[in-house]
Amino acid sequence: MKNINYLKILFLTFITLSIITSCGRKENNKYENTYKDNFSSESFSNWQPNIPENWEILNEDGTGILHLIKAGAFGEIRKPTSYAILNSIDATDFELTVEIKCLADTVLVGRDLNIIFGFQDSVHFYYAHICNDNARVHNIIGIVNGKDREPITKPLNDNSKIKLTDYNWHKVKLTRDISSGKIELFVDSLLIHSSIDKSLNHGKLGLGSFDDFGMFRILN
Image 1: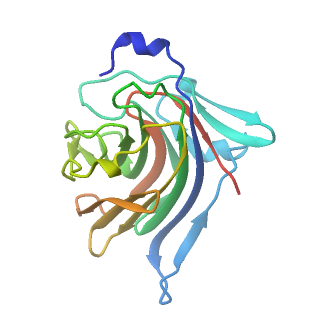
Image 2: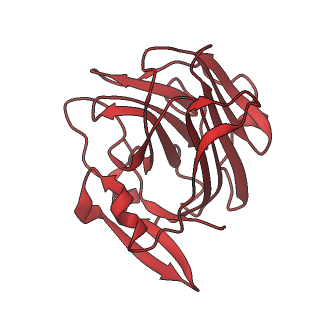
Image 3: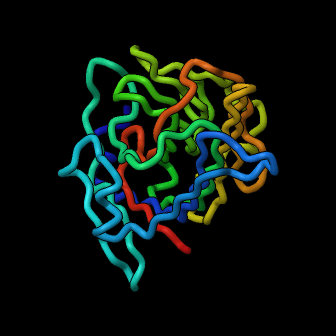
């Protein structure tokens, strides 16, 4: 948990998001269902935040923004504190791509963004934790399965894979194949993690943070 003094710092995380999800693939290997969102007040009804009062929709130069105003509080189970879940799709195989730009103070260890997937309920889901630190529970693919989160990946052994150390844009892609159980996380076209896990074979997608706050936006 970060030092409380850092809560005085404003964290802004901008994300360009494109989601392609599926409940199975066609013979030509194309995903059957696609979803894109411009985060308008109308489309926000498709998202369910775990703490509704901590989220709002903004508009910046005509672009809709999903704004996480503040982080949530930790409970009995150690897991991401804030997330908004896309209700309209229960995904099996999927590809999710984002561009992220974190404006949190770069000296803050663990400044993070989470991509939620396989979400079945508040204590059963996966998440990709992308941050500026390499540790057992930082820069991981993790699972919350009725208890404190556990990494399903090992700590990075290559410092070139540690991202979100600056104020630049970074391209992120997360993919999952249910039949093999393979989950892959790419940042700036570099494979960061590859793991096999079949604990949760479907679930919803979401955006959030372990214990930070920021903003999410779509570019069509």
